Figure: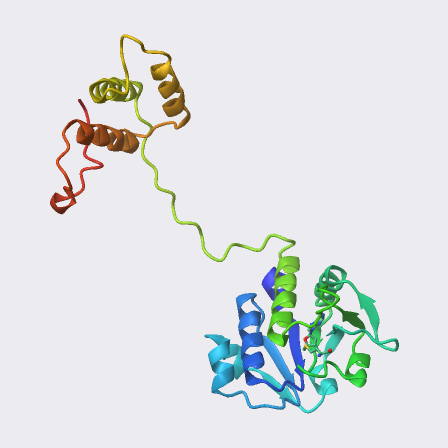
Length: 263
Ligand code: SAH
């Protein structure tokens, strides 16, 4: 199965959610990570314009959300359900680490749908909801402040699912822009630049040819490391021209920085 096909088999189940904003946030969190199957068990609020605003474009996930009367209904057809809980109970399902639970959940998609089950904002998952799941995961967090916002908890798990589906290397969201490139400058072009630079440094008084120290070889080292391109030589020569013949601002007449410089 392709990584996307694995994600297509994951249901995100929200139990007794009370804030529409959290339903919207969960939809957005899912869509940005390539998940689409939202299940709402006995929602305590409407999927309204507040939810739509927080979904920020993930309206399709909201529109296709399946509203269920019970968690058992939401899990019908699933081969595995993992509960998300900041507080594990002694009679609850086996506690498993996030990075153990998620890959194993994805492997089980070979046999059917799988589910991540999230609780109510105030009370979390009820004991009977936890007991409908085969494993429980706690997102590692500050022991003194361990409860994430529901939408944030969905986001963390959706990210983990995406990472695991692509074996740790999901494709980047956009292909990088073609980097700007100019041909490398020819040796003679670079030599003419050094000659021009030396003239200007003498004229400004920075360089004294009678006491050269090691300025010019050091500048060659500096520019040598830069692997100068033709475009860059033109800029540098233009800068030197502007030092030799300052005109004041001249951008109104068009930028002169990439004029070809053959001298
Ligand atoms: N006050 C509730 C937490 C509600 S947060 C409680 O004490 O249980 C809403 C839901 O987000 C939780 O039911 C759980 O599904 C998920 N969640 C929040 N923080 C989590 C964490 N650290 N680990 C796993 N799930 C978490």
